[in-house]
Length: 264
Ligand SMILES: Nc1ncnc2c1ncn2[C@@H]1O[C@H](COP(=O)(O)OP(=O)(O)OP(=O)(O)O)[C@@H](O)[C@H]1O
Image 1 (tube, protein in one colour):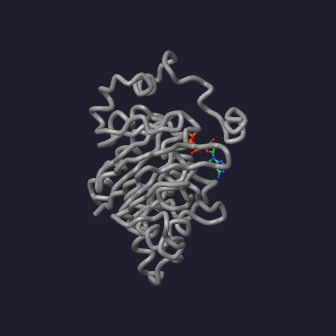
Image 2 (cartoon, rainbow, N blue to C red):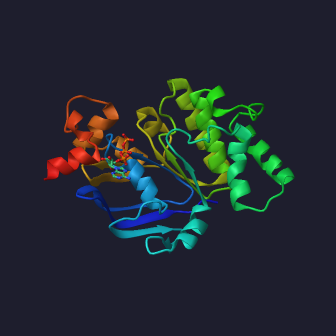
């Protein structure tokens, strides 16, 4: 079953740049939540802060009701073992086969025998439709397959909370749709909670139970999908319509240096 996450009054800065401030939201257990926002608004930073890879300046993060921000590394490690993370590029180790990549968390975090590991990896490969590809290196498979292998690795410890950072970036529309279907099936099958960062509007329109949106350092919207899709908020409307007219402009995307410069 899935575990929920909750953040209360969360603020994160890098030096003089405040990425976002006073963010409060609940990622409900067992549901799929999508986080949207223009490039550079801090969606990846949010995912990393949620599982304690980055420390917030202030605010609290709860996973399964346990507050993370004051935890020591050892306690964080225990929480992270219950989470699966799929980073933007799949983050596979280039020198390892698909099999060894997927087996890695089991070898690292458990005392399972190689026979048990083989059985689990085979199951995850089947789930993501990659049976037969286990001996290939990441450089020998397509981008979509790397995403699926990354997802298989994220699933290998039976995570209760799965964070996916742009699982669909670089995929064609059909593969994106397949990946969305795979996530929906996994959610239905395992009951795991999903929090997904995506730029794909079709995914946002069809996949999640809930949608949040970060914009200019704030969480400007968080609600059930239907309510967000019907929202009259100009930023939300422009983003979902992929429109040129509206408050969002090219200047939204800044890196840390540019933003710090602009804030001086
Ligand atoms: N470790 C870091 N140190 C300093 N600044 C950082 C660090 N990580 C991210 N940033 C800055 O935080 C801001 C938000 O970055 P983030 O990658 O979270 O954006 P994003 O919304 O995920 O963007 P995209 O949609 O393009 O992936 C950017 O200005 C980035 O330069």
